[in-house]
Image (cartoon, rainbow, N blue to C red):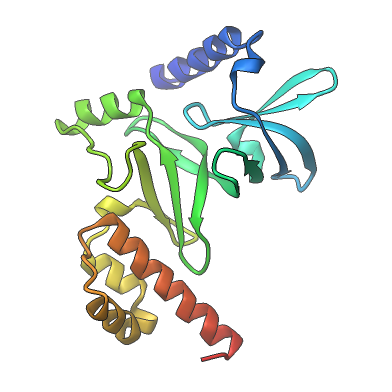
Length: 212
């Protein structure tokens, strides 16, 4: 077992030990989880996106599940007053470590836009590896990192250039390009890329249903 794997196991143990009697301090949400084995649980949930853990309150205490056992989570966020959805995918947090983690679904369709809140450890690690501090998106003050998922590969939106994005939406490239020009979308901007993906998904769904 590598040093990085041991580090993350110890990190999970210390986090669980530190929160063993502090469940009231965590954010709990009413929701439903579907596991990889297709079983389902409903109740009060807590997601730890840093460690890739799902906590469920049960009658005899709190049960913890690693993200690789989770397929899909849906919960109601009182503060945002809306339903939020999460899926579990393999995530490489560094060049040395890869494990499943939970991602919030921002857009769903032929192409998915996902996000996760970047923690301090991730920021320090990326700064050390690249020499550059990972600036948050200008329209997002909570340090969310946005990703494109095409069903096979997970790519950070900030690393997705116009050429790569154009190849992904090539099937309806003429319509998408016309929309981007009409709306004066900046492909270098994360929000602009999300707009393009949302429009592509809308066209794709419309074509499938024969409504356009």
